[in-house]
Length: 500
Ligand code: BES
Ligand code: MN
Ligand code: ZN
Image 1 (cartoon, rainbow, N blue to C red):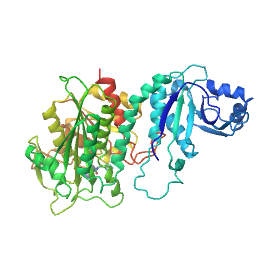
Image 2: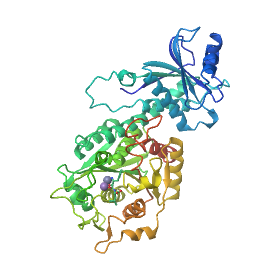
Image 3: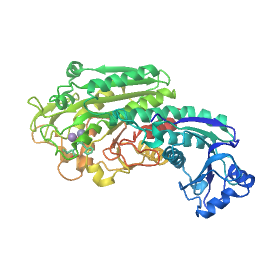
Image 4: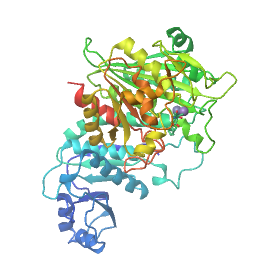
C-alpha cells in the first residue's frame, strides 16, 4: 500500500464521505462534533452513549450512515485528557486514525482537530498527527506478487485531511516533519530488505541516492580500507564473497567553520556469526544486523530533506559476516587502524570490530563535536531492557541528558547504562591489547568498553539497538518488522541542540 497522503484545510465540516471526530476523556466532544450533534438532533450523543464510548485514549467508534446527515460514516476517536497528551501521543493518535481507516477500506477522510472547550490545537500537534498517520500506513510488500485485495484498504492509499484553525501553519510544520517521515521509511526499507538483495555494494548504492538531496557520499572499497589499516573491520568481511564498503555521507547545512556532529552505524548486512556460527533458529532475523547503518542513512535523508542548519557526518561500516575457508578464526589477532591489536575470541562479536575502525576513522578525519554510534550489538541488551528502551552508554552527561529528553519526546526511548574501568579490564587479552569478548556477564557493557577504546577524547555515545532496531514491537505508528528506530530520536537531538 502506498503511504498515506496528508492535506490541511480550514475547520469546515464536510457534508459527505467519512468524517473523523475527537472525543475527550469523559466523552466531551470537540467543537465540530458538538455542532454536528446539534444539527442531527443528537445522533452522535445517542451513538456514544449506546456504545458506552467514554473518549478513552485511542478508543474508536464507527457510526455508519448517521441519521440526519449525508455522511457515509463518522469515526470517533478518543483522546483521553488532552493536557496529558505528549508529543508522541499525537503521532499515536494519527496512527490510530489511519489504522482504523485502512481497516475500514476508507480512501479519503477529514479529521476535525478541535478541542471540547472550543480552543484550537497547536499547528505542531497537527504535524505530529500527520507523521503518525504516514508512518502507520507503511507497508513492505515489494516481494508480494499476489493481488492485495485482502490487505488493509485493498492496497489503496488513504488521503487524510486535517481540518483545523491554524491549517497554514500546520502545513508548514508538516513540510519539515515530512522529511523525517521519509527518513524513517528509508531506514525501515533498508532493515527489512532481504540480505541476498542488500549486499554491502547495494547498500552503498542506496546511500548514494542521497546525493539527490545534496548529501555528499563517499564510498571506500576494500583496497582503500586496507591502505588505511582497517584490519579489525576487514577481518569481519574476509569470509564473504561480497566485499565490504565504508560509506561516508556528509550534509553541510551549517557554517563552513562549524565542526560536524557524527553518526556512525553498524551495517552487518547478514550476521551468521562466522566460524563461531549462530544456531539456525531465528537466524533469518540477522538480516537486520545493519539497523544502525539504516538509521544513520535515514537520518541523513531526514536532515537533508528538511535542510537542517548543521554540518553532519554519517558513516556506516557495511559488511557481511560469513563462515568460509577464508573466514576469520577464533584465536586470530588483528590490528585496527588505531594501531591497537585485538584477539578474536568469538567471530560472532563482529559489530564492535567494524565500529572500532569506523569510529577511529571518523575521529581522525573530521574531529567531530561528538560521535554517536548505533549498533545491533548484543543480545544481552535485550536481557537487560527488553525491546522497549535502547541501551545508552556515554562519556558525556550532557549528551546523555539531551538524548534522554529527545527519547521521551519522540517515544524512541533510551536508558543509560554504566561505563567503568572495572568492566574495561574484562576485555584485556593475554596475547594482544584486548580481546573481542568479555565473558558471560555484563555483555552489553564490555562491548561498550571495547568501543570506548576507539573514540579518544571525543565526546561519545553508543546506543545498543539490538532490541529496538529490528523485529520491532508493534505500536500505533509502526506495524512493520523494523520501526526505523532512531531516526526521529536523532533528528530531534540535532534540532534541539545543534542547529542554533
Ligand atoms: N548481531 C548480534 C547481536 C544481536 C543478537 C542483535 C540478537 C539482534 C538480535 C551480535 O553481532 C552478536 O552476535 N553478539 C553476540 C556477542 C557475543 C558473541 C559476545 C551476542 O550478543 O551473543
Ligand atoms: Mn554477531
Ligand atoms: Zn552482529
